Image 1 (cartoon, rainbow, N blue to C red):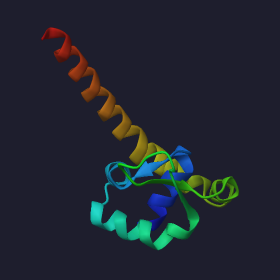
Image 2 (cartoon, rainbow, N blue to C red):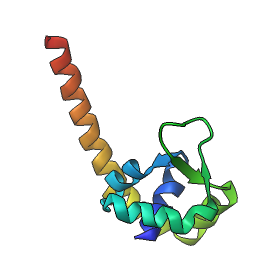
Image 3 (spheres, helix red, strand yellow):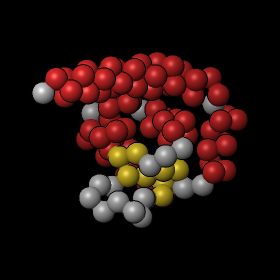
Length: 103
């Protein structure tokens, strides 16, 4: 489970909250919080958000390490976890926008 979180951080290159990580990895929010606590030393907290804790990998070299060491696993997370959930989110958002225009 910890690798799913690390791979997602590697792929996205952005700050991610516990809720976002939970959604895209399919892991329980409490499990994600435990994982974040365990890997906190290699994360950087977003200094611009005060209402939510969101993180990214501490250094680009760490991202490059995962890309070199685990390319197949990153592709699997991208294809099986990230892309399908992004498509679902996009479809829900488009439906919301259409319904909003009807009001």
